[in-house]
Length: 195
Ligand SMILES: [Zn+2]
Image (cartoon, rainbow, N blue to C red; front, side, top):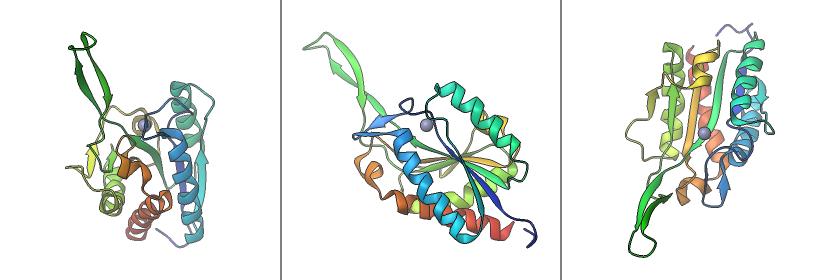
């Protein structure tokens, strides 16, 4: 990265309010909004320009479209990161009492992972996952290439999508959001210093 080129990072708070995953008394947009606040502060303290994209009052689909459109208008964007939380469920056999089976949150799965699509996204994901998965371990694969995620397919800047642990896991859901943000910031700094 040239010293004369300002680094500009776009943070996307995943989902509209109330449209994401729930668990452990938490809601995905709420938690990602808190992490995003800490992350923006940490990156600005490093000297980076930061834009935060959030459309909390739209539908989930409208949020995605608006986010990609706004992201692509930021022509100075160095890279972008979407913040999400995973969720897990398990079938519970209630045939003896209620005559059926239903799904309920599964508290066991835990751990962060980072999704990417492009080769540059892969390098960003690896740098972020190295920090984030040390704080939130548990996934077999710290980074995953995803060809089906709207935000990765429709943004022009290199982009990654961070699953900041499972909202259905009590440990992940209560990990200090400032620590989650600090881990992501450390990973982004490492990538940007090497880029
Ligand atoms: Zn999500």
